[in-house]
Length: 297
Image (cartoon, rainbow, N blue to C red):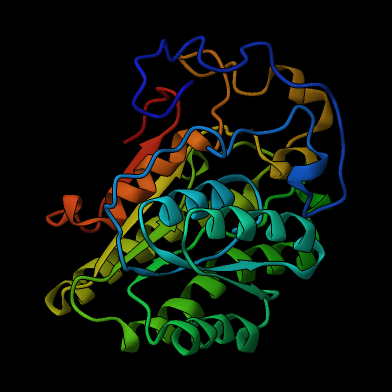
């Protein structure tokens, strides 16, 4: 694909034959994923829709967050990149891509299950950029557990802290600094609507994100702050190869969609850009599903 505007058959645009069995220790690295995911490094073309924006992206080292960070930078935004310290290698690559686009990249490693650390990345954004007007929450924890008896309280707690508590802490810290016209884009999942039996904790958090976002959208609308959600379907990211799916399921990963394949992170970037830009100025409290055609409510 030359860029995201190239006329392309979506069925054959990316590989259709699944992915080889593989395993990484969580959280996983883009550098070790085989085959590599497409984050838009060679294809995303910006058109200045976010010129001058001050953005914070969580989970920005790999997968969906990496694709979003690249797209925001190429649309003209400066970006604070949040990630776990163990993902430094991937994050440095993203920072280089942001800077190559002519924008400022600030590295902000933090474990978002810690409230102080989660709030701290917002303070870093405000300190480095003089404010924040674009917040994209992508970071998430997903670990497949086949039997409920094997789902530990520790994992359940960590999933909720990563996916829901951190969302609350970060947004609460950011809102006082966000002027009218600012945008918040959160990340849900097809799992919020059609949960897999082995993703009880993860699926529950994703529906919570939808609900929280709709409530916040109503509360913040009079202040000129819009809140929306992107709900991806099956996308090829390190999350899938580091426990998000059973290893044996990877060869058929994504083939249940009407398009017959998993998505690539680059295919999500445009959804986040749209919800971040003034193009979607009358859209708030909405969930934009990007899932290869899987029906949702």
